[in-house]
Length: 190
Image (cartoon, rainbow, N blue to C red):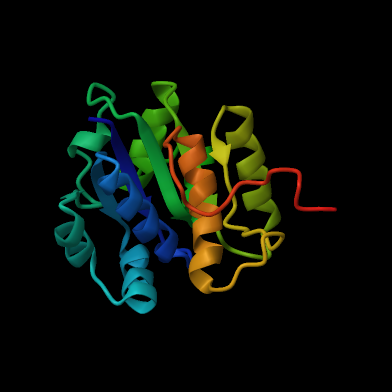
C-alpha cells in the first residue's frame, strides 16, 4: 500500500488537502496527517472540521505537530510522498532554511535528506520576495512547487471544479491514476 505524509499548514486552502485525502484514501493510500495550529484554524473555518474529525472520517493516522518522535519525523520510516498542502509562507521559509521545529517542517526535511518526493502547495498571494526565493531554492533541490492556481480554460462550473483542477495536478505528481477533471486534448480550440 502506498503511503504519504500530508501536512496542512496555516495558509488558506485546506479544502485542497481534504479533497486530495479523499481521493488518495479511495485509491488505497495510507495517510499520515499533520496539522499545524494555524492549519487547524483554517481547516475549521473552511471545511467545518477539526484534524480529529478529518482523521476519523478517512481513517488517517493523525500525528501531533509538536511530536518530533512521530513516525514521519524519521528517515527510516519510508513514505512514498510528502505533501504540504496548503503550505504557508512561514513553513516554506523554515524548510528552505533547514528549520525543523515541528513535525510539518521536520517531515519535509526528512523528505529532502532522503531524496524523496516532496510537494509544496503554496496558496498565499501576493507572494513576498523571501518566500519566492525560498520556493526557488526548494525547487532547485528537487521539490515540486505546485501553487494552488486553478486554470479556467476548461470553463469550470463550480468551486469544486477549481479545487479538482489543483488536486489533479498534485495527483499527477504522485503518479496516481484519476478521473479528476478533464485533460487537455488539443482539440479544444477549433
